[in-house]
Length: 255
Length: 255
Image (cartoon, rainbow over all chains, first blue to last red):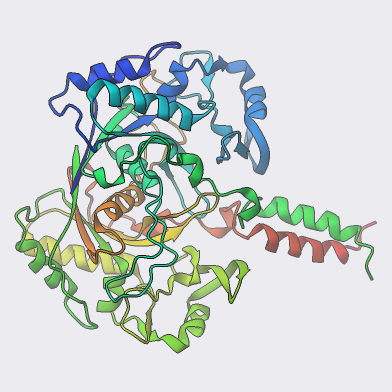
């Protein structure tokens, strides 16, 4: 069994604030506190704010371009164009993760530069303060191929296994579970979205009861959940891949 | 706050069994029981078994072909080929969801024919038995584009909202949350994978504390989470789209 709840009392976050201290103070005010094996789920937005990753809204398009490693797909809609891109962290997402909701007027927020490093620093500070072996996940809200709606996933992680590698385990009938790699950090991120909520302004949640997933701070972070583009069957949008093929076919010299 | 736990004591499921009765009996033996607002998460495998969706293992490739509406991508590996396809339910997944782990020797399992209908029947029977307004989600384990590992998602649902439509809501700063459609049924499916586990043989879990998502039995099921191919920027694998474009380009008559 596990439980998940949002932490009340996180104030508005400003650039340069000691985020671990702010989160720790809020947790200390709760009845539940923090215990060995707990996993903190922190919305990336407040990490970005603390790290000063804000830019002026009129620079939004330039910011998206700067955060973009590679354009994956584009789609026009009335009044604009959506760019699905691979960003600095390898994430494939709309607008490179540049966010304009719940931001101070006239500004937009970029994702943390290195969410795994942010998670490690937060995890180390919170472990020290509480003397508890906890994990930290930094979450963002992403769309998916093939499915409607968004889910929260882990874009940064420390002190928690991101994939529960079951290769080598067997099923109840003794057969090998040879392709099962549950992305547990993403499942935890999604679970905590159910209590944080988008509109409620609750950017931190705690999961209690999954202590078997806690790890050292030197284990791979959420970057390990990113499939390299070269191994990805969907590294390019269907229309974009078709157009590249069409152009190559028109100039193909072979008979 | 919500809690999630697996239900112990679900026996091996055979074709033709009254699955709602079996699940109800197991729940009745637990201390937690079942309460208004609870959501049951049921692994599709036991629904398939109860519905007799088993075929001989030697017919596996034919079964995949029969379940396939459309091939999305293929990739060769040493000793075989993985087919990513759109299946009858509109799901994009490997091997059309045909499953050979945790199945009786010599057999493979197909997905339920209509998982939303299965969920409705289970939900109606369990609501009647317990006199409680509960929801039912039927889950399967799917790979994703762009990200490593798998997560559990909802392939059938009844009595629970699958998307928490926040369009029209505002953020803490009063701005419209105009593109936020959390796929809560998928997030619940992923959350319960964390307690059901792949190797543990625990196919049913209960989530308590998300009663605001409970709905009538006539609301859209998990099919509403499937994006129609025509609206999908990743409806075809990159290599497959490129190849189609290349072929079209070679025969393009325009100057």
